Length: 450
Image (cartoon, rainbow, N blue to C red; front, side, top):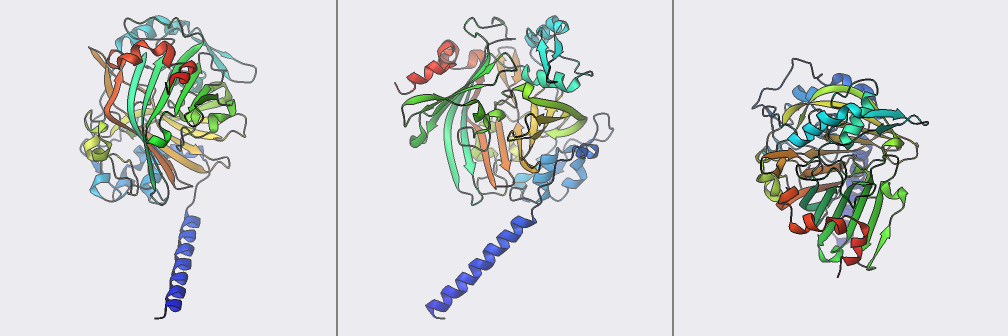
């Protein structure tokens, strides 16, 4: 074969390969949003269950699809670039449902203050929560306005007054090109605190309810990139986002429109932070689609979860970041399925479905629809418990391993806890506990490279 004919043959092969890839892409169907999907999920009162010890794989998953959120079903279906594989590392082992009580102080505050909390309808149809002090504002989240009560319970769910996380951020594209970064996240609850020995409100909090700080430690080209996000106590106010750019050696305050911008270059957006904690609630409308019995991983192994290289599928797999069996069991949890519709309509995510654990009010999985209301992304959280004081452990939102899969654009991002892991309250580093009045606010960005 001559060199020219070989080149022609290679060109034809390349064209056929590209045509096949294009046909495959066209074959993918991203369904329009249909709230009717919930009728196929198992109701909380259903006698149907999954026996502990059951192993779910791509070969038998359809037997258990009634116990899977829609996004999880799509990952199992094999219809998309990102999908659950058929190797043993993808086996989902179902364990017993484990009850983990909420912290005693949080429960005491709930009992003490919940009777004085009410919802007030605003002129635009949204609702404001009045009279909230601490604890869970609506422990019996029932009608009327059940969806809004759930939304405010999510916002007010237990969070420690201080939290510290070492994490690895991973971004992967459709060619399995990988970029990684190592970072440190500190977070502080500044108002409505339910931790023993702490004031209800920090004296320096002002109108700030929550502060989140992300610091990029590696690789060198992004080292010192830092973001501070402030959530106001008033849910009608948009979050404040401040970013320190080491290349400019200065900090910037981002526009309110930046809540749709990527979070530090990942597939999450700013509004995804904290499992919708940072949403400006009054810009959305909430509806409960059902109460269902669904699978989730909420008791990760405390050792394995800090070793992402050993306990999660590899970056070149069909579903990077999927938990291996060593990472822990899945269990059936009672959940609210909540629809979140955005106002105004030009917002980047017009429809979001969240699956909210009824015990903790932590959302486990999100299904995100694009501006054409077609399925766009799905992401899930793998939860666990950590010590918050010498006597208790608790679930901490946004403090464990989570993965987001952009089904349409074949991108994905992982946020994986790395050694030494997650710590809360008195177990956090001294600077997290003693310098929060500085670190939690944007003025501290001027000191990042000093």
